[in-house]
Image (cartoon, rainbow over all chains, first blue to last red; front, side, top):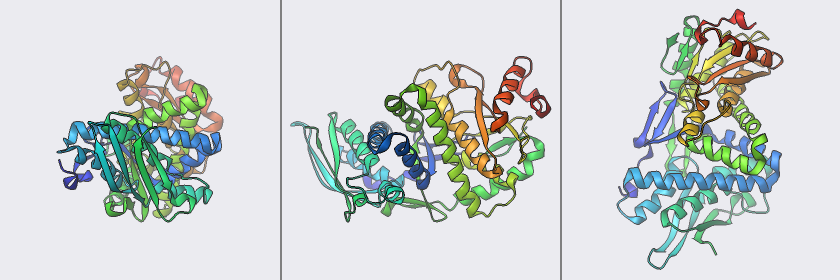
Length: 182
Length: 229
């Protein structure tokens, strides 16, 4: 499959008679962004901002890793780039964020990986701002976790996603950068 | 027991749940995937998808790593409760629902349409907006138990805390009462069903205990409301 051909909803099976929704073989649940924002708030209330950051990053990382595997195993991407680009595409379809890669520079033979781009309309920044107002640091922890998990699984090597600018700290745009962990 | 499309209910509750099914099906028919913006909207509210496996396992394991085993189950229950209450508030407001039972009936159907679980009420359920409210129900295919088992774990106690919290959160919001829910048997520890008892906070321990005792001599479907009061 080419990334341009992918339509998330074509792979969704709604089974209310079983109380389940499947994306390929992966069980999915739906919730409002506000509910997830409440979860964020609860975790911050319980353990503070640093704990919430660690939590959300780990949670995102596992989700990214699972998505990368599901895509590889069930969608049969035509090329390496299709596999890589299906990650951001799925995040858009899932309603999380619109991820727009701008630079992809990878070479498996030499182990080089570099990717950067923008995250538009991040639900996470939106919810953080709603509950806490402007942060001093980037806040899209779930997204950096997801990007780290997805690309590391894709590349077979530990990579790290960071967010140099974030709407949650008052920047005009959320931007991401992913490279080998140093 | 009558199985509607998205919920199983005792015959006397069929009309109110049938109405809830029609309302909720209509609601989800308006899903608008705005992929070019990375958004999904239903009736103007932003929604998103999440992996059930992540909610069941990664979520649980990450909380346990950070907060320790002891507090994890309470956090999962509290999260489920808040989630259920938040979703109920939004839904009740959107449809301007007034009748408490009508508000409650939307919960299990909404739960099924959003992929969390199918709810099968047991005959001992009495959905009344007062202290005698008792809801007993199974969650066939609970995502929490399903992934727990898939992960080749076996529990020594019930583990579906998000499910328990979600349903009590929605119901508490519907009835304006402090309702709590406890899972009494769980597929994750080898029981036949994930079965829950929900009632007023001041009565929960007593009624859960009664239900457990009754299960030693009766089948779930033979237990009556009067047995539990």
